[in-house]
Length: 461
Image (cartoon, rainbow, N blue to C red; front, side, top):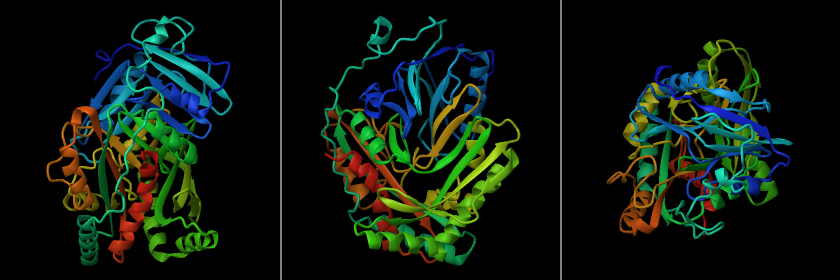
C-alpha cells in the first residue's frame, strides 16, 4: 500500500472522568467478537471496526508495517492524553508460519475505551472529520450502533476441553524430535499439540476473557479477531523511547503443597537442561534485536516467574531503539524466537512443519497493538485458543484440516464435524514446549497439560 492509496483516518482522544474497573471495561466489548488488550490496571477495549487490513506469506510483518506507516502519516489525530495507546491505534494478530493458511490482520476499531493506571480515556476513529468529544456506547445515538446483537451478558455454557486425554501422535513427535537432535544439525525443536472442541454460537466470550484477566494479572489478556488468551511472554514493547522484552523458556507445573511447590521452583532454577534451553531463547532475542537497538541490558541469570499454573524461567531485556524501527518492525526482526521455534531457527521451523500434523495458524505468532508513532506492545500468542465463526472451522480460515491432529485432537475434530455447526463454533486450543536431546515424551506431555490449563479453566462450563 502506498501513501496515495492509504485511507485517511481521523482520531480524537479525550479523558474520561472515571476509570472503569476490569469487568466494566471488558463489558464494553462485543460479546461474540471481543477486542481486548489488558494487563492489571492497564488496557483497552475496541468497539466496532473502521479499517481492517489483512496480510499473508513471508512478508506479512513488513507489509503490515509499511501499510501502517502510510496510514499513520495521512491520519489527523487530536490526542491531548499523550499516554501509550492513545490516539490512532490498530490491534493485530499474525500467523506463526510463512506458509500458514491463516490470514494476519490489523484492525482499527471505531471506538477504544482505555485505561493506564489511574487515567482513562476514550478514542473515536472515523474516515470523516469528527466532533471534538467522542461518545461512549449507549451514551448517544452515535454510540448506540455499537451495542451488538447476540447473547445476553453473561450467557455461558462453555466446554470441557480434554487437555489430558492421550495424544500418541504428540508423544511420537517428541520421540522423533529427540532422535533428530541426537543426530546433530538442530539443538532444540519446539513442538505443540492442539485440543479441539465446540461452544454455543451464542456464548458470551467476555466470560472467558474476564476469567483470564482476573486470574492472570501478570499476563497480557487478549482477544483479537477470535484469538483469545493470556500470554506471559512479551515479544517486544516499544513505548516512550524504551524497548523491552521478556523471554520465557523452561517450565514446571505448580504444586498444591507449598513445600513441594518451592522444590519445583528451585529444581527449575538449578536444572541444567532448562537453563540450557533458556539460554538458547535469550540469545535468539539478543541477536535479533541487536541491529535495531543500543544499550541492550539483561539480567545475568534468569529468575523464576510465578504464574497460577506454572513456574517459568524468565529474563527481562531493555534497550534504546537506534534506528527508529516501529514496534511491528521489531516484531518482524524477532519472530520466531527460539522459545517458540527452536535452534537453529530455520532448521527447527522446517522440523515443526514435518512433525506437527496441523497448521499452527496464529498460535505462537504475534498479537498486540501499534499506534501512529509506531509504539506498541506485542506478545507471543501463547496460552490461547482460536474461535471459529458459527458454522465454520477456525476463525482464521474456513473449514478444518481434514485428518489433521492426532490422538485427542483427531477424536475431538471428528466429534466436532458431526456437531450442529449452525448453533456452535469451534475452539482450537494450543500448547507446546521446547524439546532437547534428553527430553522425555511423557514429561513434555505433562508440561503441555499445565500450559493448557488457563484456557481450559477459562472456557469451562
